[in-house]
Image (cartoon, rainbow, N blue to C red; front, side, top):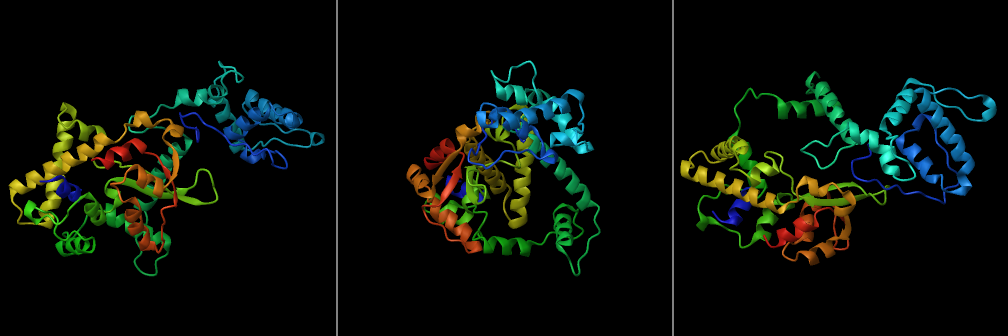
Amino acid sequence: MSRLTSLYSVCAVTHRRVRWTIYTDAPAFAVRPQTFNLFSFSLILWLAAMPATRLVIALCLSTWTTMTASGMAVLRSPEENYTVCNSTVCKQRAMFINASLDRCVSPCEDFYQYACGGWIKNHTIPASRSSTGNFDLLHDELQKTLRSLLENMTLVYECQNITDKVAVAYNACMAVPTSPDRHDVMMAILNVSGMARWPITNESEEVFKNCTEVLNTTGVFTVLSVNVGRDLKMLNSNIIGIDQIGFGTVGRNQLIHPDKEGNKKIIEAYKNLIKTALRFVRPNISEWNLTKLADDIVDLEGQLANLTAPPEERRDFLQIYNRTTIRELEAMSPHIRLLDLLKKQFSRVNITLYDNETVEFYASKYYQKLDHF
């Protein structure tokens, strides 16, 4: 099976060093007690070098020292014109700040290690991730909470509110079906997607001349991860983010090293899953074609995985971050018609893109390799 056919088938602070932006034109500097956290403390120490803020910093540092030294917050007298939060949440935050510090390091020599060293020591980066932080931990906890809530909700099918709809959608995806899968529904989805002839079992049936035609049919998400999120440099607006492809069903290492002893069973199970999907779409397909298609699909994914950078090379966010335009990306990799691919996706929500659209890009090496793939 040719490559074209195969492609058609297929601490809030992290362990990275952190840079903060300080707006020196702000009319005043103040820390609200109820939002006092590691970032606030870090900013206070950083501003200590600015003479105009000496007095405010002295007061803030005095407050913080009292909080962390005793492990709890205390109230100041009214004459001092400020108070320190004494609630349970504030006490917990103070203890968290205290535990996040590395007191063996001087803040004047290595401020990052001093402010975050304790947190880093107590939190290792999972093998499956390139970084970790408080937001990641909160996200994981949120997923567990949401799952628990959705699994225990009563399903409502009439006069639904948004919560009812989410519960029904979750149940439709996760619940064990009580009726057989409908072949006609699957075929309708493939027809709408322009893939009614999938899977192609005969190379003479190929209708694509190049990879651009394949991607125009399968979509840009086949080879790139595209999302819309908060602009890192203009927080009041959103921006398109583009990254290398991810591998959710089977891991990157398994695809690159399918013959390793620990990966063989995983790859074999993945191929069986592919065969099941192929057989459902085309019940009369031969066993030989099933095996060949499954092998070709896994082989193609392995080739794509080889183009991607491993997680350990992506831990320095500033090194992989690029702010550029679609025009510049097309000049970098002329064989990838990125503007046309993105236009097709965004036209579905009535958004027109132009080649001067700014994007945040995180996979320069992968993108250049993909151009010659």
